[in-house]
Image (cartoon, rainbow, N blue to C red; front, top):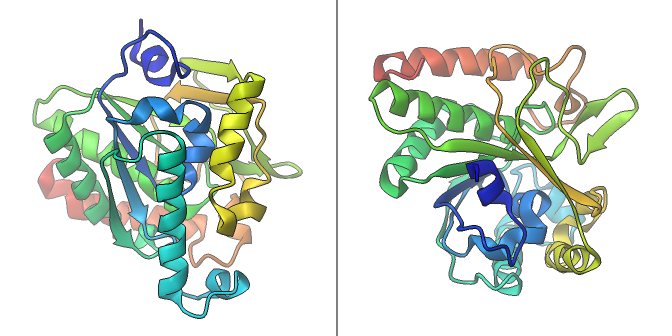
Length: 274
């Protein structure tokens, strides 16, 4: 059985769960990707890159929080509640505390931090975001994971498999969720249609994230889809035309993201990751 199949099997499956590192941008991203099977990840290591609280305070004020710190605390309380509801309250977890929407400003640092976790944890699989231009923090996570593995490969270490779940990207008619951005190459992919109990389980986790209710309502519950990560050229936008975050006031455009990638590769070159 492949690592993709073992690592994404439904709850209750007999397949042994591979040792896993999950690298996500924000608290709630894990529920989007693996919510219906999150109970299998009790021994996984959850690594969030950002603190979930944009510094412009638009989000915190919109949700009625008097301070940014209160909003940040609320987001992490929601994540802890989701872990508990999934039955994995004691799963190892940590956050790199980068401000939400600013992960792209720390690409070289992120790659090295992820590399350190891979070295310490020695996972068989690493879950992360696809590079699709949906959110700059998502794309920063994808870059960090792939660059971290490039460093490990250069040093002769065994490579874990990189698995991706679906998030969102720009389509012809706006935001598209639940499917991967089409790639020229064929990648190994699995799709699980969710049973009514699985939908209920995932919905219960989604409901933990009260502050993200409007965002999470845009994601369907019919299925969860996963693939082995394809090779990416992070020096180019993931698709032609504007990407989704080109149309949002998140401080990063696709042009700037690619420029930051090139700068990070120069920084990392002496460390064997370029």
